[in-house]
Every structure is written in structure tokens, then in C-alpha cells.
Length: 127
Image 1 (cartoon, rainbow, N blue to C red):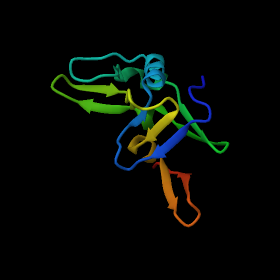
Image 2: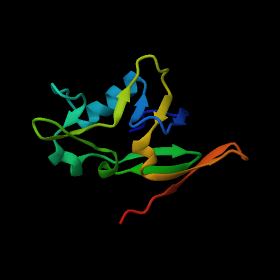
Image 3: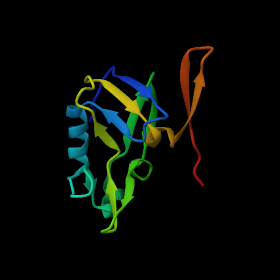
């Protein structure tokens, strides 16, 4: 399912999660089957991780795929460990604008090429 066509993404080392407009993020979190707990929002049962979909980003016709094990945020609290969606919204963010933080950058090497005014990505190999 496509959520955004011809969108703009900012790569931000100061952001932990993946931030988007409220309407788009709400749709994604709904498809992930999240709910709000008293401790966290957009959580789901950790036993469902293997059933979650891969998330695909496409930049200039090149695909960058996040598997659930790469994007699920595990949070420990007084009750135990819960799993949380990395997708958060900012209501003031215009539709089609995304901020890709550590969840995305932890999966891909990020190269800032200031001379060519571009950002490039390469897959990170996991042991």
C-alpha cells in the first residue's frame, strides 16, 4: 500500500523515530495494529513482530526496506517490555513531509556529499 507519492524526506540525526503528517502516520499505525497504553502510545504485542509488514522507502527509484526487526522500538517499563511503532506524527507537519531519524539511519549507512549536494545510502550488514 502506498502512503506517499512524490513526498519530501529530511534525514535528521537528531530525531529518533520516523515522523510524518498525522493522517498518514495514523493510517500506518492502524495497519500495524497499534493501540495506546497507559505508558506509551502506538504499541503492539511483541509476539506479533514476525507478522508485521516490511516498510519500503523509495528514493530516486531505489528501494530501501526496513524489516520489522529493524523498525520496531522495544520499550521496557514497570510492567515489562512492550513494542512500539517508530511512526509518530506532528500535526503541524504538512502532508507529504517526512523526517527520517535513527530508526531509518540505523539500517543504512548515510553519506552526506556536500560537494554534490546529495545524500546517499548503503545497506548495513548485520552479523
